[in-house]
Image (tube, rainbow, N blue to C red):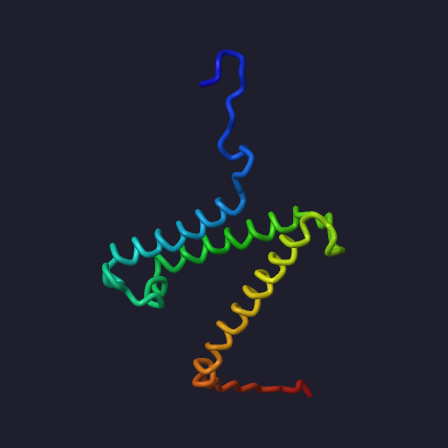
Length: 140
């Protein structure tokens, strides 16, 4: 316990604590949990094992979910814009080259995982057909 006149250490500024990822994970998780609780209380989904696609389809939980996820996306953009690239070129003889190499492999794995995951939805969109009609009127 700090004595009189000594500043207290804040948890979010302690070394080794990642504030930004914790904030983003907490806020995004809250978006899912809050929309689920509202959907259950409104009777839109079953309480124990709901279909994940039914949880945020009806108001008010759809609006709250969309708002909170948009805030998460905004936070990601703000925090990502604050990151400065200090080291771009690495040589194998450098101290942290192994960590950099493993990090790059993990990043590419996640990127390809997202691409392949979203490619699984193509079949769903092939069933949708849209009829678009246009009219062009000339003023003569």
